[in-house]
Length: 423
Image (cartoon, rainbow, N blue to C red; front, side, top):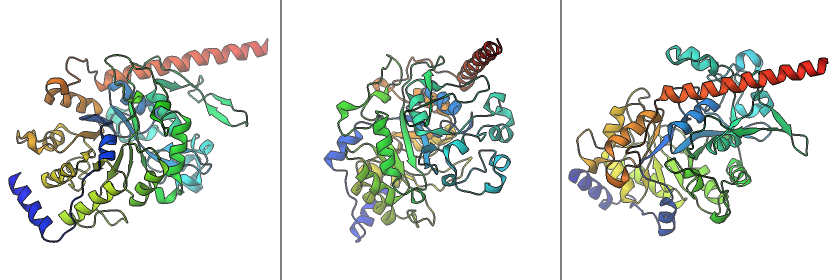
């Protein structure tokens, strides 16, 4: 670490941009975010179809601190949770809309998207983790994810389809109910403005929708009160219930404008040729990114990490972690899949805690990350000590059993209604 510090010192005194520091008002915002948090990346990409109801319910019940997801917008203006710009990889769009297979998400209405199967692809891609109940999972909205974080599930009929109610304007609204499989955890949410250049004004839409749902307000005292059980994750009832994230410099600036009351925001980093990407992985470019983040309200930096299976560029070498922490920001790297990665970036590999360069992890396997944190955290920092941690399969089994019961019970109700009509 001494050598790293010397290199950085020499870099700074030779005329490159000076490293700025988080101002006091943003330090207060950062205090709303707990340390050593588990951020369930897309719910999970490993155990269930990403960003679907089963993935988000699983992440909540396993004990993740935040449900992470990507935001895009439908043709009719609804914010949805979906990663890819088109629907080819994670849905059966080629079967339902063969002439629109390459169309962007923004070319579809929500009703059209609800016709797609967003789960069967996972069974084909991961036969060793396939479950028949994954077939037919549908695309979630931002509202769906918030309700799941609050302990709800989507009301479905005997065939697993959503049951809607009509509002005063005749629009279909999803119905929610208390989730019988809910175990009391109330995680926060961690939405990303995905490809925001394709969705002008999505930052403003996000602020408005979160305010409608009670998860954002200019006055913290006016946030929705969410009941929390002792011993369970309770971030949903704190001022840090939402962390915003983006790769885009332009979107970061727009988020700062849209959210009058500053809330925790993460500036994501990537090495590439995109307009907001790092072009060279050098101290001067890295410092410029940190400074840009600070100037536009970011309190967290989210760099990519190396390692299987993704083999992303390593943007979190020890010197980079030192720069971020020296500037007063936290670090939420993406994305962890193995204990080897966790050991490396927390400094445990060299048994040097000074090399810890993560304050929370975007993880595809929240179950593994929770076990890892329980093992390495000590004293009052170890909120997981003595707490029962369920296996991924246990949680999935419980969720699927409960969903199967829901479908069977509603199927019986549908049959009874049909018989009543015949009578």
